[in-house]
Length: 409
Ligand SMILES: Cc1cc2nc3c(=O)[nH]c(=O)nc-3n(C[C@H](O)[C@H](O)[C@H](O)COP(=O)(O)OP(=O)(O)OC[C@H]3O[C@@H](n4cnc5c(N)ncnc54)[C@H](O)[C@@H]3O)c2cc1C
Image (tube, rainbow, N blue to C red; front, side):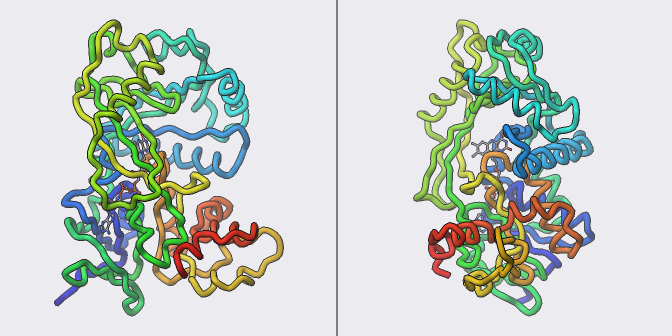
């Protein structure tokens, strides 16, 4: 049997896999994307709309720099794709829900590495003007923040790749200079590089389980727009979020339920209870949104986020298990450097995008594609912060067992 072959095989057709497909295709590489679902964006990336906004922190940490770079790049890319991908640069208003949050916002606005003009502190009066509905709290205004249709975005990013759908990968096998992916009925594809971008299912691959991913279930709810709610002009968030009306309905979300028992293959049925939680959260966020009317739920969607314990993606080479198991490696004094850990040739991780994958996938995929192409790392400190070996090295330093032991490697 002839096995489909390409320079790069990507496991997972969500935003991570599709962004990687785009990043490799732009480098002239042939790409195959494999997904177990019959269509792209069937997992967490399949919501009716997703927010693209930066995550600010009260210090000038690497995490803040990562989020600000990722946001700027994504906004720029979406500007180019605007005609092909439904989106709305309506801006995002992040409201302070406590006095402590207000103080934190002031600090964040002062330390952010976002380009000038991309964030501003707003008073309740200014927030009301932006939102088009009454708001009694101050907050942060992100004029370039937007919502995007993630399904169309995924399809557009993967347009240059060949797709193998309705094909569940059950094993990966070294194959000459590269890797082969096997399904239940035999080999699915082979490539010189294999990118593991299949969210929680990465944890089923023993040498990739060092990613230490944790599942968090989430649900979004579509709420029919009413005459008063149609006045909402921007996205409003304070943990929970609500979009302006999109084709007659607001998208509100999202629930956040840690599920240590779950991997990726459980049914993700929508729960009425969670629609109720989302509705209640919108009422708290924007009490006057629906006037005196009772809002009607018109749909919703549940799926799993793959999260990490430091809230950063896991992206880079899969560390060589032998090198990682050696307690003397890497041998540099002081803080261990993940970039010094040798990788398994041709095998890459791109997962753990958590709650912000639509904002961070493009930048992160670009770093993985650049590293796989042997290009000089432009942001080594961020690459180290996202590196798949980081948890094992940190745990070793603090004397903990860590995910290496959990993975049985
Ligand atoms: C309710 C909810 C709301 C969210 N809202 C936002 C938001 O507003 N903004 C934002 O930035 N982020 C948001 N997120 C987070 C964002 O959706 C995720 O970070 C992102 O979609 C993760 O993308 P992914 O490609 O890593 O995973 P997924 O989109 O889950 O893709 C993984 C793919 O791998 C496939 N797969 C898995 N196992 C296998 C296998 N063995 N063989 C073949 N294929 C396999 C799956 O079918 C799936 O298509 C939200 C998440 C949830 C759950």
